[in-house]
Length: 203
Image 1 (cartoon, rainbow, N blue to C red):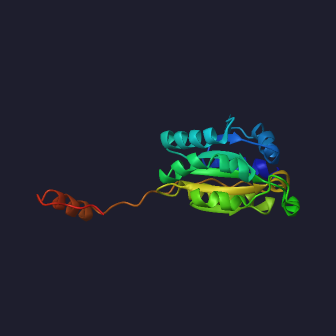
Image 2: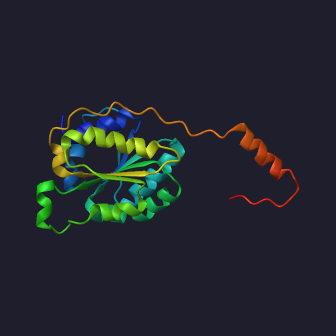
Image 3: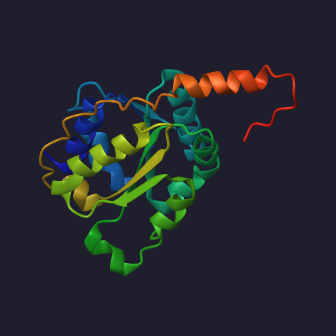
């Protein structure tokens, strides 16, 4: 099982079942792996802004993370406006960004960029996979971060060779964390303050 398949199976195991994508050559292993992973629905977007906006809307309505797939730093950059909106709304998104193969990075090809620098302003969690054998664990960590209340964008950068090399075992899946509860006494104090007839300020 190659890394891309391990990644997708980890997503499905964690109830992330839709991936909005604008893939390029660095992500062809993902495209091929979709046919081998039942339960993952790919949705092609012809522009990255549409991909990010659709993922934001889907995750808000479905109350579960969507996945996105972008081609390198420039592809991610094209989606940043709607990823910014999703970040502000605390929308849970597993944001996958393909990158050049690790051994190709030193050659500064035309689309080479600092992908993490593009991703950092909109990401609550950010990691670059450097070993296909760890891609299941890294993907599981991304899903856990996206699901964690109150929700955030978790960006996982995946070099091409980490997608086509053997990927190890998929993550086992996620037990969704429960949001923290508010003690009844705190609610009673808040209600009393609101009902006191005096001006009240929420902080």
